[in-house]
Image 1 (cartoon, chains in turn purple, green):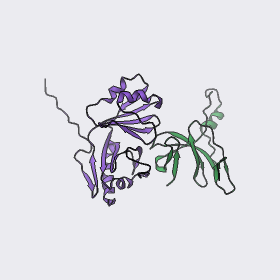
Image 2: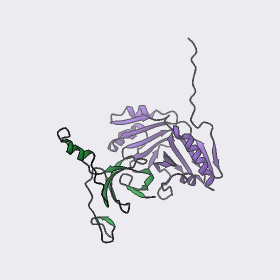
Image 3: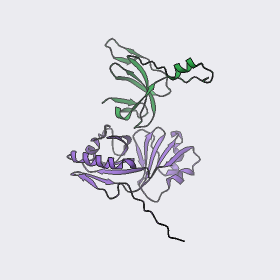
Image 4: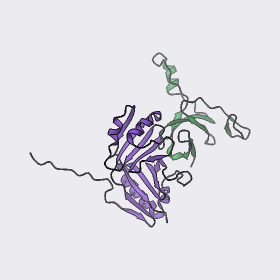
Length: 186
Length: 107
């Protein structure tokens, strides 16, 4: 048997780091992601399988405190993000008897963590949506646009945001956020 | 920047998240194999393109992804109202001040 070469998987933004005074841009660590489509009336059984309650109202998210997030994207659409590393949400969903569509998009998406007191201003440099505390509190999640690309923004903390986008847009997103971080003057 | 009310997200969102999707309430004939070419042309190609009140489909493509219906005044580019796909046509009227409002809405 000849030894087969082992390819190592590289994250699209591996090793990149950026930011400015008051903002840090950090590529998120690898995560399992699932695009889940199902009838919201059947959410209960799916929630049970996942171990996190699928949110049912617009712009909300839920998490189990161990790195598993469920983001409401549409009336019948959720984005599941599992950063715990050990979970297998796809298999867990497959065991349910409920009609649903779960697609593993782990390597389609990548994410940047935007944190610091200038984080919101940095996002506002390219996002037309209202991100103020009143309508976008901690835990809010939405699909929207950033500059010329579509992103999913999740507010994980007071000054912490996770920006998810397709990996082919990662250079653009990182460059864009680096530029707006310079302007935000936290 | 216009703000458009998405009936599924239940709030106003920036226009950049939306895409127009043509005229609303165009019903596909149920007997599509039997209708004449003229009738098919009317259904498939001919649109009203009104000046004033237009019933349109819009899609919240960079948001929840859903199609919904909107009533827009094409003269002032103001959205009168939006409602979910599949709901019946909402009656509107142009008031004396020239602004289109849904019927029964307080001025």
